[in-house]
Image (cartoon, rainbow, N blue to C red):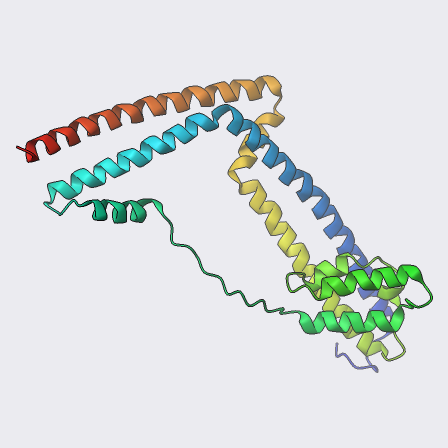
Length: 258
């Protein structure tokens, strides 16, 4: 179907409006699902960390010290110069991630589409007469000027009503159809992003913790106790390995000082 006034019928516009309304409802449902899930994942992880966190941090410290000692022993075994400066550099290599630099210049890829939306709002709304129109327009103007806000973000804040269904005096039916098609594409992208976000949350390691807690308090308590035991066992093994490496390093340094 071509977007000319002779080929676009009102039934096409009406069908597109129904699709837009359905998309908005699906997005609202997706957000209602994501928001509590994010809250639940954060809460269950905090609860898990409160019980097991200190043991896990101890494990990380032990692993870090083991890695440092192994590196020192390996350097010495290969007769490399083991100076303090090298230790510091190697430590940075082992534990410090290179900081990512980001371009501070923000580019809004949907600036034109958001300008078109604002233009439509100015044509349809009457802020001089209707205070609600004025408040809505001010809110959406702020969103449109924010490069981090997508066209779909703005459309989500736009209540369903005349702005969606009305054709301005400056538009013909093909213009209206093209505008609504752009809005539909933006909302479809938003829906896809929300679906990906939901799937990402379900793959989050915290999701497994949340599923455990959903089994009930008794199962959750048993699970935490088992995690504590497993982490303690691992820490005992790491401590034994660290003690062994310390002894080995002590023998190496005492031999080299003779």
